[in-house]
Image 1 (cartoon, rainbow, N blue to C red):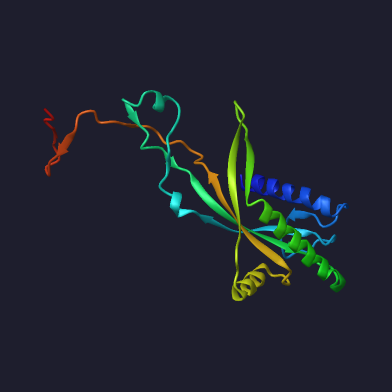
Image 2: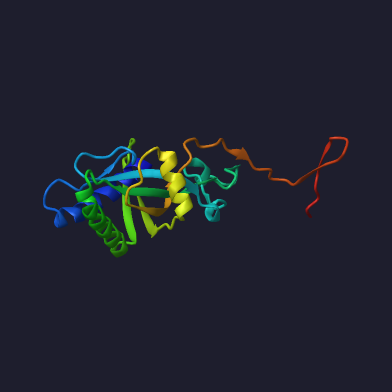
Length: 204
């Protein structure tokens, strides 16, 4: 899911860059930022994943027989979809000092591109017996980094600092892989006394 979303984002960016740079150079590629590209390209690296707590308690109802017969079973309201934010680094390679100004120009083009497309629809094909498509509307925001955090980031990446831009992509949905078993609903309210015996409540 994450890889497919990033691939579509990079494809859209490269489509724009192809109009600016007619050759195959200066393309964005999903790769490790510390490894320079031979063609002065743009490295796109996933730096961090953050769960969005605002949507933590939003539940998705379970489908199927449970939904068709809610009187006899209860799916505990469903399972929460994990909604995440991606922090993605765009690093601009410059193989020689002479190419450094060009890396700054490419940085400007990337900033301009995402400024003009702050929202992007991502379409993820879902395989299975009945293939479907999952659609997301990702909000794209520039993420500010302090000088100290920038130095720490590049130190952790183990590479020389390059011109870069960091973006936050939100929200990507990760669905549960396993559907829980249904839980029977108690039709008649009951009380349990300290001794452990069960008594039916008189609801009349």
